[in-house]
Length: 358
Image 1 (spheres, helix red, strand yellow):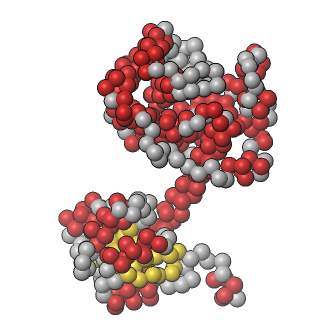
Image 2 (spheres, one colour):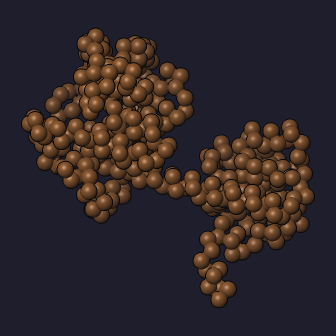
Image 3 (cartoon, one colour):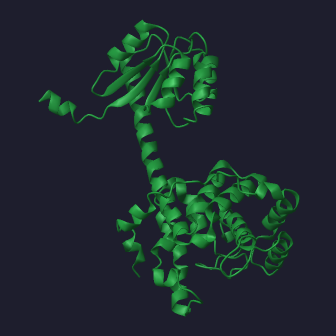
């Protein structure tokens, strides 16, 4: 009976880092199987090597160790290994406020002082692991959405690296405007997800050669609404949903789907619009060649004068185009890069058929 119950317990993998074998033994006694699996490291360098090759749900990290101390180990976990979402709890006798602040400065999530209370330690470990699992679920959901966004790009081979170019240029423009991190993330994701709603547009409309009739055009416009509906359930995607919904609105109110005007259009969507039109004009398409930079600038100025785009934002963007043209070139590895190996599997599964309904 006991073994059957244990079989249903999800084991959390914990890396315990301490140069004292007795401390590691104590942690192993408090955090026992089947709920926890402890992997031991005797110093910071050994811990970093293990983390390069294995996945964990939590790191328990001593501070005073030979070689590199716990502060430096934590800093390298975050910056060198890029494990920014892996929970790290400092377990140390150094409990002064300055020590706690130093740990938080290098990326520690929590602090437990020695000698620790086993009940307190278990509570903090459980809370950290629960947050990690929630973060993993959100990350998985974002990955699925980005893969679906890539499916749109895969359906239209003529646009090339359109998504990656939009993500790169959007983040570049956003930084020039001094936008906050959440907006920059929305612009990065928006490069891939702005047209995700086109997955819900029937192929006879989306892939039609030639001009759409009035009814077909009304169907096509719905991709903005569908795209926003796909992104909205994730709280972290709320500003990306604004891009999906509003990237075809216009400053003078003549866009769609809602005919928003001026600052009624969310800021990230107004930023993205400019990046999107720049890429469309600068890139080769089946119906047009790639225009030279001077013509692109001229058209964007004319459209801004006609009331299509935010004039203040456009002035900043064209200053980048004129003074920093090399920065607009997509790096060899685009910042929005995601694998599209799974796209056909997702498409053939039928999960998107619902969105193709009227």
